[in-house]
Length: 461
Image (cartoon, rainbow, N blue to C red; front, side, top):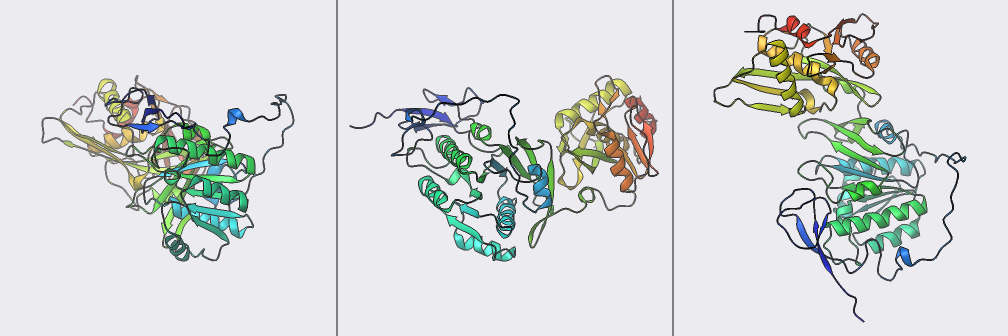
């Protein structure tokens, strides 16, 4: 007897299901993303297997909240920056999703990690659905890891992948990428929402049962988020984004979700001919080599997880030749820049009318914390007035709408990093702690004090 087959229209951007086609998804607002998909089989159920609801097993057992549970041991990869992001090493029976732009270095990093684990005695499997085996072998030769005992496979059929994994019983598995894996239980095309969700569910379930550490590689959309349904991010234990600019030699692995470690940690790598290597001095990657930078430049003492990083903020304020001034931002939130400029105009008497404003963070670094407000304001004031900031100085602090400078977390670590790199002055909130190492801390309680320091003649002009 033939199976009853129904269909639904699924948004390829967010995974929302609609009963009929529409030009715009009501859930996420994206246009032309609804694709008709068959729903003859429940997600995650392969042909010939019983669905989870049909299985009969032992009853679920409950344990006390304060019961002694053994902490899962971590497997140290041996790559310092990678272990930092994972929280001290990868956890068995865990699933990790890594996303990034095409060509950013995801496959290179994971091949290096797989080779390091294989040399340390961990049985490792690398499954690729995008490249031929010869291409991966050629990359391994270029990275000088071809002699590592990594088991390599090129396959996209989920049934064959699971059968091979059950037979091999590895401890570390890389699937590159989840968008290329497909299941014959679904009639949807590979890469569709239904296929990605079902294949990810089966692979994660296998990892939890077998005790292997699973890493899934995911494509990203033009907005920079991992493509496919957000439910995949909920299935896995950790979600990392691999970021970087093609014109720069460094790459950043940023944790946005981690059930076994910190969620605000980053790992910084440098791209070389032999692959990705951990950065020895991360702050040096984002600072200018000039002894005395020109006007419109300020150094921000940032915090990325437990690591302090110094980044250079550059600004250019020039008279606009057009009726509508331009606002161009790279590496900084455009909304926060608009707020800083509004506070400077309303509370400090600065005038940005008819001015083009360009703000950029050097080295391709992206500032994600509000503590970067004071450095951005210092760069804007320096460019507007033509006065340089005091040499060898750093800035940090959040600007409130009232013009007050609010405290930033972990100020002592920011100051220690600035002093270690030879900076002599620090400008921060009024509650900034005293610093050692020859660093002078100047408290900035309100933004008008920074204006008096950098642009005393431009205010109220």
